[in-house]
Length: 300
Image (cartoon, rainbow, N blue to C red; front, side, top):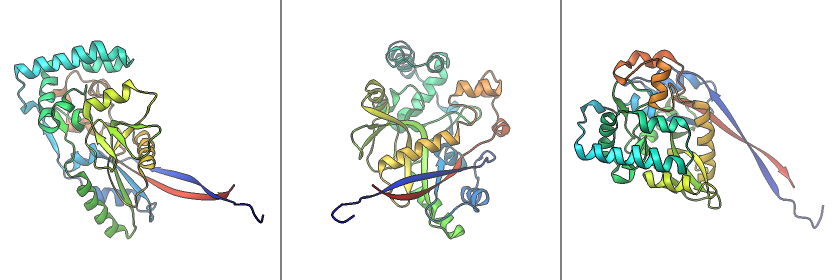
């Protein structure tokens, strides 16, 4: 109609392709696995979402915490942070469930202290105060006392993965690397977010355990997401990347469990020494999923 401004709007459609993989052991060819599993659905603009933990294991970026000898100072500090600060004070303040309490109270101090000492090397004090999964170091879905370490230069690593995949596929795909650790975005601000672990995404600020406390204390101010660790492709904006990360995290699941306690329970093992590499094959894993984006236009 003449004289009337008609604005065009878009409805965004996201489609998820999810297929099970065998466990990605060290030396797994990540690109080959992706191409073999998803070649038929990958198109220009597809986003390959990868679990940072799975990529770390495939690249051999793991460490045996049994080699870390805890000292008296670290043990006392671990007791203070996990058993008292989180197990008695912040546990009640944040109204965490019983599963959280089991993690911080039931894991032996000897094991926790070794984990915390490794945390100090990678993330410093700001990550030491986090209750678990400090600095992006993760013990779930790994045998014995192994942990996966955060990928240093994660943006460069996924750029190499993307370039190789594009060469093999002939498709201009994007790569998004994600982790289950929390990121909190202010509800009224779109360009920044606070993460609890390192991230290479523009606008995300790593505040370690302090970020966790801030995000959980001011729940009404922040929206909670898993952490997008790195992204290579056409920039989609921080809010959309966070939403995609949340969808992907739900689709990927948690393998043998969200926590080491859950993993032991699922495997019916009493301690970490009894968990083996062959145990990792006992369930389906989803270290990589595909998300495609399409738009439908309409006028007001």
